[in-house]
Length: 270
Image 1: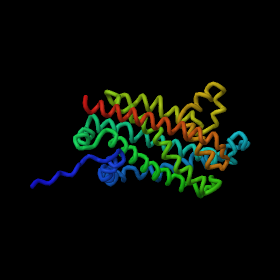
Image 2 (image 1 turned 90 degrees about the vertical axis):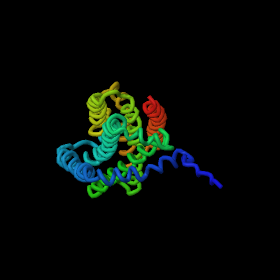
Image 3 (image 1 turned 30 degrees about the vertical axis):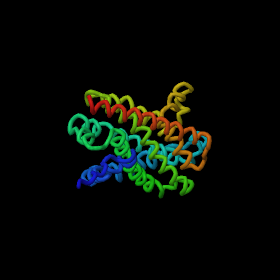
Image 4 (image 1 turned 90 degrees about the horizontal axis):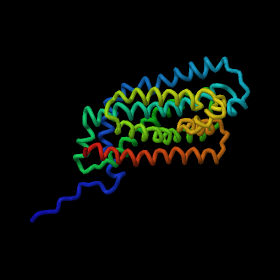
């Protein structure tokens, strides 16, 4: 008498993504050494050079630094958000393109009962965990400098970085799945990541850009993340503005996640 073969297809998107947990843990176990310097040493250098040494020459009215009583307190939250964005760019560009074009790992994944939605959700989950770990270290480095007004503000600011990295990770993932050649990454790094880092309120208030460019800067997801992180770090929270930031970043991540799932499905069957 034959027995029925149990179903192998996951019961839902989350269940499917969790089936890839061992794969991403293996990737982490084999690559974590390469990220040690970026995770631990780079934040300390940034804080020391820009916050402490350069900040020692900046004597400004707290009113011009959005309520921060020192340049270090102003720039530190921005650097944390920019760090999350940088991780999104680094993890969602060449690694993703390689899994489509060079190693073709996505094709082996899709040959199993997994779908494009499972693959994308698992990869974004790995990205978020990696970012929370890296930004957690960054915040621990900053804590002794007294840049946080409260422990809960620092904790929520840390959790916000998960939203920031998803708001960047999903559109960059969509971009990586849509290009035909890796030379396009030079464009997204030079015209995307670098200008965002410099002109989204990380190192100076966007009001200094003038009325028109200020509005442009405020439309960027990095400014949304920087302003939200800074409010939490300084303890001067505008709850309406904070809600707008969360909705903005969440919508961006949700829409781009949906588009990335569709694009990956199209790419794998083409």
